[in-house]
Length: 315
Figure 1: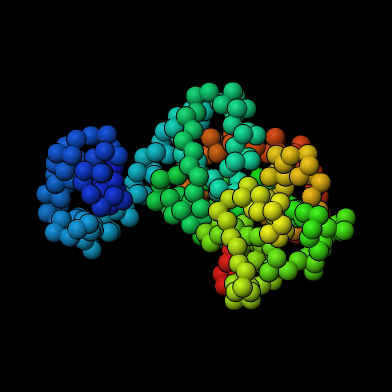
Figure 2: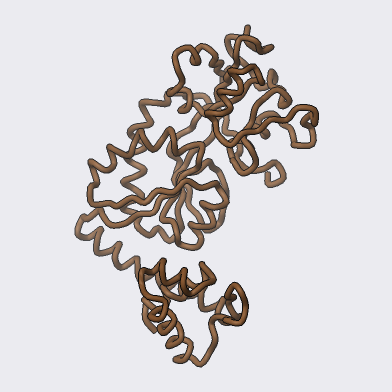
């Protein structure tokens, strides 16, 4: 048994296809198939049921994959030990970010991070919360930036910042005359919200103490992007709530439509999440330090109330 063979097994388990697994591992399909077969022959077992389409793990195969993930993680830890001992911060690092966080946060810290740690090769993906946590569990991400708390047993959460919710209210809206808004002012039926799959949407629903069944059926408008919500609000389709960092990029005329909440301001907690195995912790520390240092000057709110990013039925 070799580490390479275990990598190949995990790739086939992920893609359920030998050709796609070989492409992922950057080897030929015959090479990958031969190595997996050698591992099966060495233990006289069958890891994959090749008669199924797509390929499926056998019962023993599922146990082997679970153990292979642990073995590879421990092997990677040796690299971490050596890098930390040498004071080296570099190598490939796979980072996931939420769609409602990435467009505003990434431009704020990426250039600074690259300048300070030029030997780190960041690979960044935009994914929703479920995709982030699943990829962290499977080892396909090293860390992620997401709204927390999530309370997932195998993950650690290190808070980066608290980002307040801000009302975006155009002149024709019923709340336009207010200089500051309260949670009790909100009506879910005239708030433009993100579509299903976004944790910021769940935060808005939780803030309004409502469920989908309480929304009016006559008018329901959801969008996949915060930028679109602003445009729809500008067209008089309702108000919306924005994460604070999104307000920094608004045009001057649009900033006049912002209404802040009376304290304590509802906010989302944004954290760096990663496996409790703490692989590549030296790079995780570097990312945390860089973002925390930059964001400290951008968000100066002190009195906030954290709104859960989880669906109401999960609370």
